[in-house]
Image 1 (cartoon, rainbow over the protein chains, first blue to last red):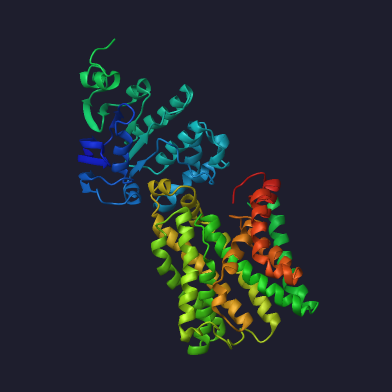
Image 2 (spheres, rainbow over the protein chains, first blue to last red):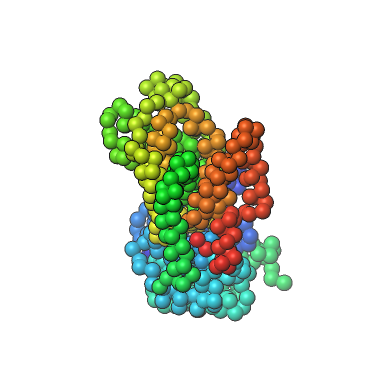
Length: 238
Length: 312
């Protein structure tokens, strides 16, 4: 069942086309990975879908509803939740209050026990009552994932969730994401740590210079000439 | 369950409040009662500034507009429409809340210094407009505002109750889900939107609560002096709540009150002509010292010492 449809999205910043006529669909309970070299337009695509940026043209549908011109908070309340590549915790709030924050505007009761369990799984339980400003970068990344999950999103869009994390921390994050997926959740993940990403996703999109250059199974990504050229600048693998 | 330390704190606070209510009247300190009434009024103004600027991070340099506006609205309601003074205090505050929210609405899209600059301009425009309107008393302002209460003691107790009430409102707001929402907006608007928070709506709500408290304070001020004039818009009134809150502790419940009491006592005890003339210079120097020595204010500093944290 289709949950998200992106149609011919274009976003320009001055003379640069950051997202160039990108279209794709996302199925319910799917894990989609988006990869590409730096500056490929992945984060801009996320910003367009989440409403942080407005597209110059194109359409976005969530569950068949056109949400192209809706505000970011409206999309979040509809279940389209994102995290950020550069972490954005609510630094004055404690770790637990950070989890309470998205629920203050939703009809979801803040279940403290659920929050505690989530923090335990992510190795943040010891930091539960301290302001998020005192967390390490990796802990802030994990807190963003937890803040996204606690809101019970229809689609959770994660922008480089493994960035700056240790192998053990990546394991913790992967584990909670798998749990969310097994409970029917849908994920879109931008990530540069390809080895870890490929184990998690079911389908991959590859972007380069704003364009979608590959769409298919993770196993086929490395076989694509367009992908090899985008990453290595040549069409031959050394 | 309330922690033992919190219980001691609440009991101490109630005892201080009771002593403040009883002692000046029992000792018949009439001049002190006037000063304390004025201090309570400025403490209220500082509490209102702290809600918007301390907790929500929207730096207001124009709270004197809401303060004076509350005073003008209450005075006009009392004199021209015969509204009983106590009702006029709240109605006046409501009027300026409506007007201030309407004027403030477009500026809520701004952030940081841009918002601060707009709020700085609003009292300047209001000063000129008030001067030009004869119905508002022009340059001289509105005179002959009837007294809120017959006795200075009753006025003092009412100001103390109103100040305590504004602190309670501030406490309840910041302990509710609104407090979390306001803090999210202060910390990161983009993340707040991504979390599902309708940022402009909650900014407007915070602004309205803040204006209402400033409006009540302004109405008390007008009734205390029996006059309200365009001088109330001046930079000094706009900077006082900021200075009081920074000294006492920004984004703390009691910080604005502590700061207001220290600064008002300083002003009244140091009423030497040369110091009065140079007061804006003194305020500025004091603000600089606070930023350098006590960046989190007195209450913020004490809280870190006692609780060892920075949580509200």
